[in-house]
Amino acid sequence: MKKGGIIHPELMFQLASCGHGDLVCIADAGLPIPPETPRVDLGFAQGKPGFFEVLDALLPEICVEGAVWAREAAARSPEVSGRLEELFEGTGTAIPHEEFKDLLLDARFVIRTGEFTPYANVILRCGVPF
Image (cartoon, rainbow, N blue to C red; front, side, top):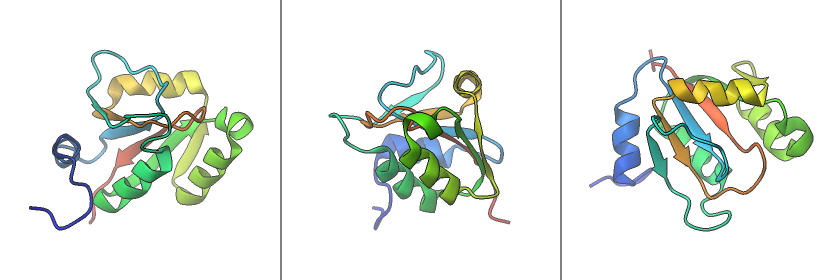
């Protein structure tokens, strides 16, 4: 049995299946996920679990070499955009929301949270620890 960190079995399976360059999305409750893109649905009530709660738990578990989020977050959810800019300074970038949604077709999987904040979404590009 794991001693800590993420213990959700489906989420751990998906994370362990990722390789260098794979895309993993952490999404708010409203992001349209393409039917063919696998998902791990963690949301069980409004705001539960929250976007940053999931992101903060995930980051120690994987190696991330880059991140993208929707440019529109800066105007609609500046706290989200600001925190993502801090977390991924030098390795992250904001792109138009339509481009963000197009990238979901290439995602290894999407983690849906219970977040109701607009544009609380990020796509992480997996790296390697060496």
